[in-house]
Amino acid sequence: MVTELLDLARTITLEAGELAARRRREGVEVAATKSTIVDVVTEADREVERLILGRIQDARPADGVLGEEGASAQGSSGLTWVVDPIDGTVNYLYGIPHYAVSIALVEGEPDPLTWTSKVGVVLNPATGEIFTAEAGEGAFCGDRRIHVGESTPLNLALIATGFAYAASTRAFQGDVVARLLPRVRDIRRQGTASLDLCFVADGRYDAYFERTLSPWDHAAGALIAREAGARVTGMRGAAPSRDLVLVAEPSVAERLERLLDELGAFDAF
Image: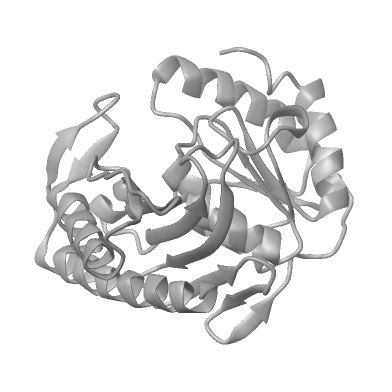
């Protein structure tokens, strides 16, 4: 049953990715802003989400949907599809080929603190790379099984992160990164959380952490990373949530969490 749901998620994600890529080629403009003037949404975000929601409702009318652009519906099956139609919208707006369609299926209340992830799919339409996972069955990039990188000292670790939209929060996060940078190999900030999580899963980054993520930012990528052998955690051992998402090979995650705490990364904004 779960495998069938993963196949459905993959099929919908690929169709949504084709639409997103086509709209990108045609030209993209800002349709609205959300939390701040730099937190943008394009008409393509909305159109792709409508497509995804329609396909899910046609195939699984009893399931719920939680979508970034507001196209959400409560279901009766106990299953919810968590959808980010275009993750990395600013990259998408600027034509940077690092954005994603992210779809996850979770069981239980649509809350990352309590849900149980079932399947996850993350597609970069610009490159065609598709990452998938089914709970208990491992993680894949296309047909290739992927694994988190080996344990490495933090001073040799490549760390990915991201920043919030609010200026004051960004200033706080920038200060943390400035103090973290001399302690690690280097920092990457590419602007698409779902792909960052998949890159940890595939050993392309040693670790990733970010605060203020929404559920749809990490729902699929977190499962993919976990199935690839990563430790996926939140603030001080809690489940991943808006407070913190930290993902790495387990021993790297433990050391990075201690260092971030030491640097004040977990303090209130």
